[in-house]
Image (cartoon, rainbow, N blue to C red; front, side, top):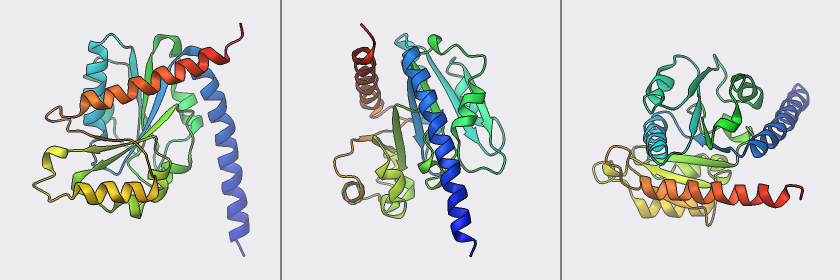
Length: 231
């Protein structure tokens, strides 16, 4: 008997989140900041990939920042801060995902005009974060070779929502007997045509391809914003 009530509450929460996410997206567009939401299972390598990505972008004089979501500790924020970029940790307590109101709160005091790219490292989870829009311009879902090839089939919602799938830790693929072709087929079965980038933050393999993809999306967003601007 409680199911209709729970569904109504959930729909209300998502509706409120979507409205706030739309407002955030307008703010991001007005400031010209490209926002990327990173999703993955725990241990897939989000933080290490992001640390190296931010370091390389800063070397190219791009102004980057990050918001990092975790249930507890600020370990990931400390690691990302080594890139020299502004970083803030969002501790969610018992909440297994980030929501738009948290992004809004933790942006306070930052001038978005100071950034070219803002990364949001979501809580490690391929279920809960999927349904929450954070106002991002792009969503990347990470799949580590150590997780196995079937993750897209087990968590199709995450991969359907992805603008890009980043396969991480490819330097370990042979050691863990990861079947790349099977993984590609599984990804394609739930999201045909989604771009796939293969990376290793440890060796640097594929990071240039990942940044090229980010640049292409960033420039595409800027073109859309320019086209919609008055005058």
